[in-house]
Length: 177
Image (cartoon, rainbow, N blue to C red; front, side):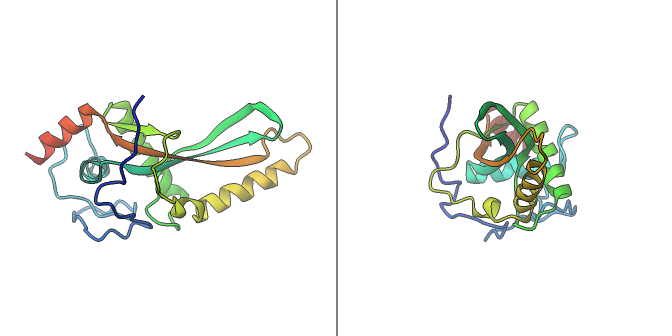
């Protein structure tokens, strides 16, 4: 098991996608970021390349998982949405799903790790806690819990982190050469 204790990269917390240094690209993906103008290998999308480069620069980034549980029943726990990466508190469900798909593919390729049980040390996760999407999720779970036979009644925000694997670091090295 590895541990994620670093602040991610420059030592600053970048909330809401307002980074002080920006990358530029010619494709807009709707994720709240601009992407690096690096040739994209056939196996990677521009969004995936951007995340790999961002992780190389910052070392670690926040990620979350929305899950549900049943009060008083330790056996009832399910994942509702993962991975969740937010660029801003107003990111839409569509944006989060698209980014989540890209991050899941990077994990499947063994380029990144997504760890929902290893939160960033000293990182507040405010953009997640105060996001419109999480508020919607909480409200949806509360509404469903009003049903007499509700399977779940508790929304959970699992805070985690992502970082490059050794294979991911090698891929980034190839990209930036």
